[in-house]
Length: 142
Image (cartoon, rainbow, N blue to C red; front, side, top):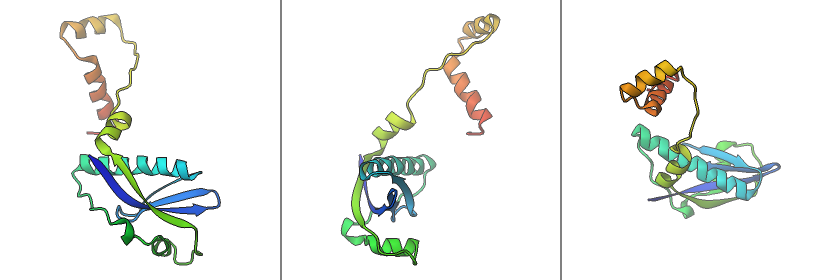
């Protein structure tokens, strides 16, 4: 399912800043407009995926025409001078993006003593699951 949120793109001396007003002022940046758009997609996907995983409420997106980028800029920094900015919709299929970027499995090679390997094989131990469980416990990730 495609998720779409308006984002304000602010052109600055060293690139672009991107702010999602609907999502607690979620922000990112990039050196070029293209890079800032890629970063905005990644940022949006990460935010929405985390909200889904944590069971948090996800706000409804505003209409593109309801967002005034100059007003957003003033709210972020009342003393900031007028800047070149625009509002653009950023869209992402969160499930597909998460599967490709956040939940992708990575193959690891490890070494254990032969006796331990044999004992685990005799018990039908799933090495990958044991390593994942141990890493989660070690990193306090529940």
